[in-house]
Length: 294
Image 1: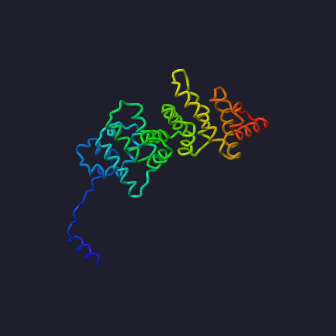
Image 2: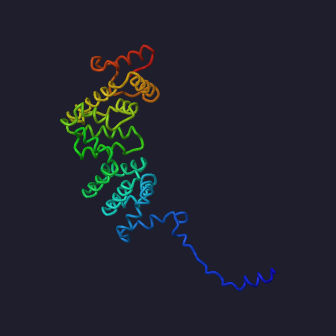
Image 3: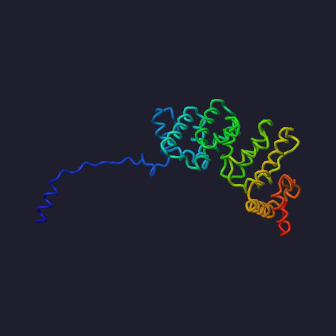
């Protein structure tokens, strides 16, 4: 019986061999994306768009984490930047929200270009368009309190331009400092703080430990610096006593542990009791318990 089976198998046609090109596999060829995209002149607009719809997170990571020159240079090409923006917008419109990490990556790229490179006006405009897509939740809220669109866009970029929150806060403060005096009233700064921040301890500490004002600053900048100081106190004063205590305890502990040899913006022991009674009450209570308040 087995002999007949063997003879039958021998008479069957040999199947045709098929080969898989593993060079088209990301697993086997990690440079596949960069090889495809390094010369975008070889790609049609729609082909590039489809590629970016899938792979833009990889490109962002390569730029920010690995400083990949191929991808960095692509962001200096208007055609690429336009199609990249369309890819991000397409995903958002199809119910695929931007991951928080990718939002930060994009704002890092835009902020670095705006602040650290020679500015091409077309690229600056295209990057502004990209920022309006990735910060679409925040820009309208900032504009709603009376800040013009261009400034609202710049503030939103700085707000998410680093993975370290204290850097974001310092960058936003610099933008506020350079804004028109008549626009940045104390109340405007209070409103802005309420709109763009939700973590009071790090905000309060960063402002208190950031006292970079000197003779090179203009008179208007000096005035806005004072308004920022009053605004952060006003924001703190409007919190519950429990939350005020939490913020000030963290501030006191971090000062003793990390900043004891540094100056602070101003002493909480000397603020006006009439304007900030709840803060003063908390400060007095902490001092009576032997806690240090700078």
